[in-house]
Length: 463
Image 1: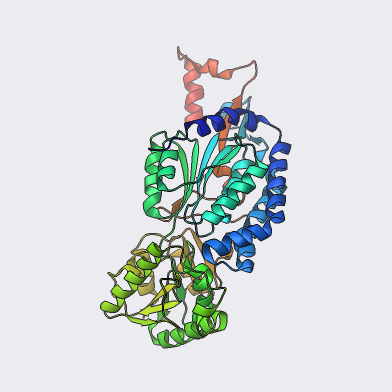
Image 2 (image 1 turned 30 degrees about the vertical axis):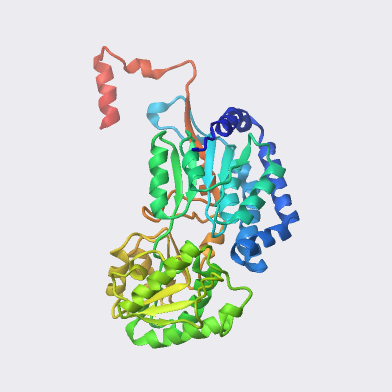
């Protein structure tokens, strides 16, 4: 039987006008309660992350709990300013009068979140949706069941069901939820599924935020040091076993420095994860067998096509273990060369000129993030100026995501809309224009019949 969630949607819809009209203290109280509940149950969050992904506790604190806490703190500090009515100057033609922008909640929002950072990518959008005054339905990923259960328990402890509800289930549940006439849908996941979400939203002309992905490149400048670059990327690619939408997907290295880069990557793996990451208790596992099989199939395809491969130890499907993996000399048409990898495989491509590297990146879809390892400012500025991406980080990885005022999101295939800070608040808000006039309405002086003086005034206005 196809699930239906009409009753849950109707409850949220009925409550939306009341919730949106409550004073800001109500939103602040809910967000403070959410913050306190998460911190109080920190050990439960750790256990859920270990159960779903074998995520280390420090990683869970840094990449799950901290972004939610920081987002709450940032919203609380800025909510009065963001919700304040903006008064605008008037052009001559609109005097006398008053022009205003009111920031009002969109209404009922659906947030569909992924499994790779299940708490972060579910609750950070919730923080902005609640801060903007909406009622919300959360659909966490069924692939991270312990985390989904944790999210449901936390939300139930903080919010009444007609303000925020959590609905768990598989793809059929997500499909059924998309049949409801939401005012806004916030989806994080793959471009393929994102296009289906957008199609479903179009049925009711709902607005969407799509945080997607793609092949995020790393430009390595010849003066940076190929060995150092390899070491840095080894850590970045190892985070969450590469199951990160903003993970470096492939490296572009000067042709003469490829061997040094490979040696640096190997040394970085050993430094951070040991000679055999399989025995490291903090190496994250692949989320499920289907994803492990995809990674292995792509790797075997590359080997069959003549690519060179390095791994520190052997993959293990029974344990859902996939090691950090380097691939080079891979033909352009292979999956590892063309598709977002979303795992710990790093293809290495070489370039002989900056133009070659730029052509490679610009010939594909615009990435969610573009990384540059370079101490040459002119070269760095050229890469930024001659490419397009959702975001860019120079000489580090991931940190743009952590800044509360930087807009986070993609471009076209890598995403639609922005989140974080005021950008996240705006995604869940409607900027409503209001123009006020008093008793005197000069507009009526410019109505038919058009006398000579009217023609002169209009002529003067348009000249």
